[in-house]
Length: 275
Ligand SMILES: [Zn+2]
Picture (tube, protein in one colour):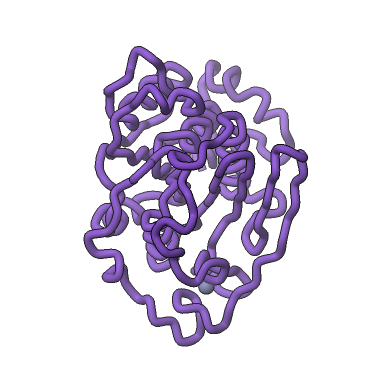
Protein backbone atom coordinates (compact mmCIF):
# COMPACT_ATOMS: atom_id res chain seq x y z
CA UNK A 1 0.00 0.00 0.00
CA UNK A 2 1.41 3.37 -1.07
CA UNK A 3 1.32 5.58 2.04
CA UNK A 4 3.06 8.49 0.38
CA UNK A 5 0.85 11.57 0.85
CA UNK A 6 1.67 15.15 -0.06
CA UNK A 7 1.30 17.95 2.47
CA UNK A 8 -1.91 19.05 0.75
CA UNK A 9 -3.33 15.47 0.81
CA UNK A 10 -2.68 15.33 4.55
CA UNK A 11 -4.57 18.60 5.02
CA UNK A 12 -7.40 17.63 2.69
CA UNK A 13 -7.98 14.28 4.41
CA UNK A 14 -6.96 15.28 7.95
CA UNK A 15 -10.42 14.60 9.44
CA UNK A 16 -10.32 11.07 7.98
CA UNK A 17 -6.75 10.44 9.06
CA UNK A 18 -7.71 11.43 12.62
CA UNK A 19 -10.20 8.57 12.77
CA UNK A 20 -8.48 5.47 14.08
CA UNK A 21 -10.75 3.33 11.86
CA UNK A 22 -9.43 5.16 8.78
CA UNK A 23 -5.97 6.63 9.41
CA UNK A 24 -3.32 6.93 6.71
CA UNK A 25 -3.71 3.26 5.77
CA UNK A 26 -7.46 3.64 5.23
CA UNK A 27 -6.94 6.83 3.25
CA UNK A 28 -4.44 4.98 1.04
CA UNK A 29 -7.02 2.23 0.59
CA UNK A 30 -9.57 4.81 -0.56
CA UNK A 31 -7.05 6.27 -3.01
CA UNK A 32 -6.40 2.82 -4.49
CA UNK A 33 -10.13 2.04 -4.87
CA UNK A 34 -12.16 2.09 -8.10
CA UNK A 35 -15.92 2.65 -7.78
CA UNK A 36 -18.52 2.56 -10.57
CA UNK A 37 -21.62 4.74 -10.16
CA UNK A 38 -24.47 3.89 -12.53
CA UNK A 39 -26.76 6.91 -12.93
CA UNK A 40 -25.48 10.45 -12.29
CA UNK A 41 -28.87 11.55 -10.98
CA UNK A 42 -30.50 12.04 -7.59
CA UNK A 43 -28.71 9.15 -5.86
CA UNK A 44 -25.57 9.41 -7.99
CA UNK A 45 -25.07 13.10 -7.19
CA UNK A 46 -24.44 12.89 -3.43
CA UNK A 47 -22.77 9.50 -3.91
CA UNK A 48 -20.24 10.86 -6.37
CA UNK A 49 -19.72 14.11 -4.44
CA UNK A 50 -19.02 12.35 -1.12
CA UNK A 51 -16.82 9.67 -2.70
CA UNK A 52 -14.81 12.31 -4.55
CA UNK A 53 -14.53 14.43 -1.39
CA UNK A 54 -13.41 11.32 0.51
CA UNK A 55 -10.53 10.77 -1.90
CA UNK A 56 -11.70 7.57 -3.62
CA UNK A 57 -8.99 7.32 -6.27
CA UNK A 58 -11.04 6.45 -9.36
CA UNK A 59 -14.74 7.06 -9.99
CA UNK A 60 -16.53 5.73 -13.07
CA UNK A 61 -19.78 7.49 -14.01
CA UNK A 62 -22.32 5.91 -16.36
CA UNK A 63 -25.21 7.97 -17.72
CA UNK A 64 -26.43 8.50 -21.26
CA UNK A 65 -29.08 11.13 -20.40
CA UNK A 66 -28.94 14.87 -20.96
CA UNK A 67 -29.56 17.15 -17.97
CA UNK A 68 -33.10 18.59 -17.77
CA UNK A 69 -34.56 21.42 -15.71
CA UNK A 70 -36.81 18.97 -13.80
CA UNK A 71 -33.69 17.09 -12.57
CA UNK A 72 -32.33 20.02 -10.56
CA UNK A 73 -34.84 19.74 -7.67
CA UNK A 74 -32.71 16.82 -6.34
CA UNK A 75 -29.68 16.15 -8.57
CA UNK A 76 -27.29 18.42 -6.74
CA UNK A 77 -24.09 17.63 -8.67
CA UNK A 78 -25.50 19.56 -11.64
CA UNK A 79 -26.28 23.20 -12.30
CA UNK A 80 -28.78 25.31 -14.21
CA UNK A 81 -26.05 26.47 -16.60
CA UNK A 82 -25.36 22.86 -17.64
CA UNK A 83 -28.91 21.95 -18.78
CA UNK A 84 -28.63 19.94 -22.00
CA UNK A 85 -25.18 18.55 -21.16
CA UNK A 86 -24.65 14.80 -20.71
CA UNK A 87 -25.15 14.06 -17.00
CA UNK A 88 -21.92 12.10 -16.53
CA UNK A 89 -20.03 15.03 -18.03
CA UNK A 90 -21.98 17.63 -16.03
CA UNK A 91 -21.39 15.78 -12.74
CA UNK A 92 -17.70 15.47 -13.62
CA UNK A 93 -17.41 19.28 -13.65
CA UNK A 94 -18.65 19.47 -10.05
CA UNK A 95 -16.40 16.58 -8.98
CA UNK A 96 -13.29 18.11 -10.57
CA UNK A 97 -13.99 21.41 -8.83
CA UNK A 98 -14.41 19.60 -5.49
CA UNK A 99 -11.36 17.32 -5.72
CA UNK A 100 -9.07 17.49 -8.75
CA UNK A 101 -7.03 14.54 -7.37
CA UNK A 102 -9.78 12.03 -8.25
CA UNK A 103 -9.46 10.23 -11.60
CA UNK A 104 -12.80 10.32 -13.41
CA UNK A 105 -13.76 7.76 -16.05
CA UNK A 106 -16.84 8.96 -17.91
CA UNK A 107 -19.10 6.50 -19.69
CA UNK A 108 -21.82 8.53 -21.45
CA UNK A 109 -23.62 5.39 -22.67
CA UNK A 110 -26.61 3.19 -21.92
CA UNK A 111 -26.12 0.60 -19.18
CA UNK A 112 -27.05 -2.47 -21.22
CA UNK A 113 -25.74 -6.02 -20.96
CA UNK A 114 -22.70 -5.26 -23.12
CA UNK A 115 -21.79 -2.20 -21.02
CA UNK A 116 -22.23 -4.24 -17.82
CA UNK A 117 -19.88 -6.99 -19.06
CA UNK A 118 -17.30 -4.46 -20.19
CA UNK A 119 -17.37 -1.97 -17.30
CA UNK A 120 -18.15 -3.88 -14.09
CA UNK A 121 -14.96 -6.03 -14.05
CA UNK A 122 -12.86 -2.85 -14.14
CA UNK A 123 -14.16 -1.67 -10.74
CA UNK A 124 -14.02 -2.91 -7.13
CA UNK A 125 -17.51 -1.76 -6.08
CA UNK A 126 -20.65 -0.91 -8.11
CA UNK A 127 -23.39 1.52 -7.00
CA UNK A 128 -26.92 1.41 -8.38
CA UNK A 129 -28.25 4.94 -8.78
CA UNK A 130 -30.92 4.08 -11.36
CA UNK A 131 -34.65 3.92 -10.88
CA UNK A 132 -36.00 1.44 -13.39
CA UNK A 133 -36.38 -2.27 -12.81
CA UNK A 134 -34.75 -3.55 -16.04
CA UNK A 135 -31.47 -1.77 -15.23
CA UNK A 136 -31.67 -2.71 -11.52
CA UNK A 137 -32.08 -6.40 -12.39
CA UNK A 138 -29.34 -6.20 -15.00
CA UNK A 139 -26.93 -4.67 -12.46
CA UNK A 140 -27.94 -7.15 -9.74
CA UNK A 141 -27.39 -10.16 -12.01
CA UNK A 142 -24.22 -8.77 -13.60
CA UNK A 143 -22.54 -7.88 -10.29
CA UNK A 144 -23.28 -11.34 -8.90
CA UNK A 145 -22.01 -13.17 -12.01
CA UNK A 146 -18.92 -10.93 -12.28
CA UNK A 147 -18.17 -11.08 -8.55
CA UNK A 148 -18.53 -7.45 -7.52
CA UNK A 149 -20.39 -6.03 -4.50
CA UNK A 150 -23.45 -3.93 -5.37
CA UNK A 151 -24.49 -1.02 -3.15
CA UNK A 152 -28.14 -0.50 -3.94
CA UNK A 153 -30.68 2.16 -2.97
CA UNK A 154 -34.16 3.09 -4.15
CA UNK A 155 -36.47 6.00 -3.44
CA UNK A 156 -40.09 6.92 -4.08
CA UNK A 157 -42.16 9.82 -2.72
CA UNK A 158 -41.04 10.07 0.95
CA UNK A 159 -39.48 6.62 1.29
CA UNK A 160 -36.11 5.08 0.72
CA UNK A 161 -34.47 1.67 0.98
CA UNK A 162 -30.90 0.48 0.97
CA UNK A 163 -28.98 -2.79 0.91
CA UNK A 164 -25.65 -4.26 -0.18
CA UNK A 165 -25.48 -7.46 -2.24
CA UNK A 166 -22.38 -9.66 -2.21
CA UNK A 167 -23.80 -13.15 -2.60
CA UNK A 168 -20.89 -14.09 -4.89
CA UNK A 169 -18.89 -14.50 -1.65
CA UNK A 170 -21.21 -17.39 -0.71
CA UNK A 171 -23.57 -18.07 2.19
CA UNK A 172 -25.00 -16.45 4.22
CA UNK A 173 -24.97 -13.41 1.87
CA UNK A 174 -28.26 -13.10 -0.11
CA UNK A 175 -28.47 -11.68 -3.65
CA UNK A 176 -30.98 -9.19 -5.03
CA UNK A 177 -33.15 -12.03 -6.38
CA UNK A 178 -33.43 -13.58 -2.90
CA UNK A 179 -35.32 -10.34 -2.11
CA UNK A 180 -37.19 -9.87 -5.43
CA UNK A 181 -37.06 -13.10 -7.49
CA UNK A 182 -38.65 -11.56 -10.58
CA UNK A 183 -39.04 -8.12 -12.07
CA UNK A 184 -42.47 -6.64 -11.26
CA UNK A 185 -44.69 -6.31 -14.35
CA UNK A 186 -44.26 -3.03 -16.17
CA UNK A 187 -46.43 -0.26 -14.72
CA UNK A 188 -47.09 -1.98 -11.37
CA UNK A 189 -44.56 0.12 -9.43
CA UNK A 190 -44.58 3.80 -10.38
CA UNK A 191 -41.35 5.69 -11.09
CA UNK A 192 -40.34 9.00 -9.54
CA UNK A 193 -41.24 10.65 -12.83
CA UNK A 194 -44.81 9.37 -12.33
CA UNK A 195 -45.26 9.56 -8.55
CA UNK A 196 -42.81 12.27 -7.44
CA UNK A 197 -40.11 12.27 -4.76
CA UNK A 198 -38.93 14.68 -2.08
CA UNK A 199 -35.49 15.85 -3.20
CA UNK A 200 -33.85 15.69 0.23
CA UNK A 201 -34.96 12.05 0.64
CA UNK A 202 -32.94 11.10 -2.44
CA UNK A 203 -29.97 13.01 -1.01
CA UNK A 204 -30.10 11.04 2.26
CA UNK A 205 -30.26 7.70 0.46
CA UNK A 206 -27.37 8.57 -1.89
CA UNK A 207 -25.34 9.70 1.12
CA UNK A 208 -26.10 6.42 2.91
CA UNK A 209 -24.88 4.58 -0.21
CA UNK A 210 -21.64 6.59 -0.11
CA UNK A 211 -21.22 5.65 3.56
CA UNK A 212 -21.64 1.93 2.76
CA UNK A 213 -19.13 2.18 -0.12
CA UNK A 214 -16.56 3.78 2.19
CA UNK A 215 -17.17 1.12 4.89
CA UNK A 216 -16.76 -1.64 2.29
CA UNK A 217 -13.46 -0.22 0.98
CA UNK A 218 -12.14 0.41 4.50
CA UNK A 219 -13.39 -2.95 5.81
CA UNK A 220 -14.96 -1.34 8.89
CA UNK A 221 -18.27 -1.54 10.70
CA UNK A 222 -21.30 -3.70 10.18
CA UNK A 223 -22.14 -3.95 6.46
CA UNK A 224 -25.64 -3.97 5.00
CA UNK A 225 -25.37 -7.35 3.26
CA UNK A 226 -28.24 -9.52 4.50
CA UNK A 227 -30.08 -6.45 5.80
CA UNK A 228 -32.54 -4.06 4.18
CA UNK A 229 -32.92 -0.53 5.53
CA UNK A 230 -36.39 0.99 5.11
CA UNK A 231 -36.85 4.67 5.82
CA UNK A 232 -40.10 6.63 5.91
CA UNK A 233 -39.19 10.31 6.02
CA UNK A 234 -42.73 11.45 6.91
CA UNK A 235 -42.67 9.74 10.31
CA UNK A 236 -38.84 9.76 10.42
CA UNK A 237 -38.65 6.07 11.16
CA UNK A 238 -35.73 3.84 10.14
CA UNK A 239 -36.30 0.07 10.19
CA UNK A 240 -33.90 -2.73 9.32
CA UNK A 241 -35.23 -6.11 8.21
CA UNK A 242 -33.17 -9.27 7.77
CA UNK A 243 -32.70 -10.67 4.26
CA UNK A 244 -32.08 -14.39 4.01
CA UNK A 245 -30.31 -16.28 1.26
CA UNK A 246 -32.85 -18.40 -0.61
CA UNK A 247 -31.48 -21.89 -1.40
CA UNK A 248 -33.93 -22.04 -4.35
CA UNK A 249 -32.83 -18.63 -5.75
CA UNK A 250 -32.42 -18.63 -9.55
CA UNK A 251 -29.25 -16.52 -9.30
CA UNK A 252 -27.36 -17.61 -6.15
CA UNK A 253 -29.17 -20.86 -5.24
CA UNK A 254 -27.85 -24.43 -5.37
CA UNK A 255 -29.46 -25.04 -8.76
CA UNK A 256 -29.15 -21.55 -10.19
CA UNK A 257 -30.54 -21.15 -13.70
CA UNK A 258 -29.23 -17.63 -14.40
CA UNK A 259 -25.63 -18.12 -15.55
CA UNK A 260 -25.18 -15.24 -17.99
CA UNK A 261 -26.85 -11.98 -19.04
CA UNK A 262 -28.64 -13.41 -22.09
CA UNK A 263 -32.05 -12.65 -20.56
CA UNK A 264 -31.02 -9.00 -20.57
CA UNK A 265 -29.96 -8.89 -24.21
CA UNK A 266 -31.02 -5.63 -25.74
CA UNK A 267 -32.17 -4.48 -22.32
CA UNK A 268 -33.01 -1.30 -20.97
CA UNK A 269 -31.95 2.26 -21.37
CA UNK A 270 -31.77 4.25 -18.14
CA UNK A 271 -35.39 5.31 -18.46
CA UNK A 272 -35.13 7.80 -15.62
CA UNK A 273 -31.45 7.57 -14.74
CA UNK A 274 -32.32 9.87 -12.01
CA UNK A 275 -34.68 8.94 -9.30
ZN1 LIG B 1 -30.17 -15.17 -4.43
